[in-house]
Image (cartoon, rainbow, N blue to C red):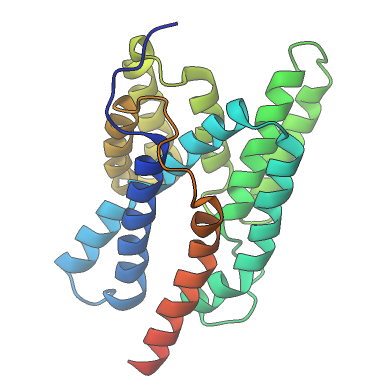
Length: 225
């Protein structure tokens, strides 16, 4: 296995994803009519989701219990739904949009299917069903987001697959989300610098809680503006 010589650890990647996600959400909520500031904030925000997808794959490879990991993601998907709908749609519940934790949870379930398909081919049926679910529940990034997680599963962080990863992710960004999402390729460069180390690991629940809490805070600020 090729040694990873990057200087970004797991904690640092999470921090980058959190910061760029927050900039994106601030831009979406507060800067919609501010021209270049809006475009710049949304471009920066494209970096976040690919990093989260990559970290889901890393978590899958290192977790002691994929089922507990999945339950945790689904729990925070439910916790985050009202804050998500309030922040972006000013409604307590919007059935037309579901938050990104659902996407990450479905992606994680797909990784389990891909592992089981090595010995049990019928798991391919469940894999197709999961992609369909991501489409019909309208979760953030939808099937394209789930496919991105699966792409990281196959390409990993091996340096000899960097160009393959860059091309595949670029195609997914463009075909599923449009040209603006190509700014997300910056995330692939950051992932290339990942060293495979966990780094500071005492803030796992803080990262989970940050998503619904920051959405509630941004919504409260928006109401006061």
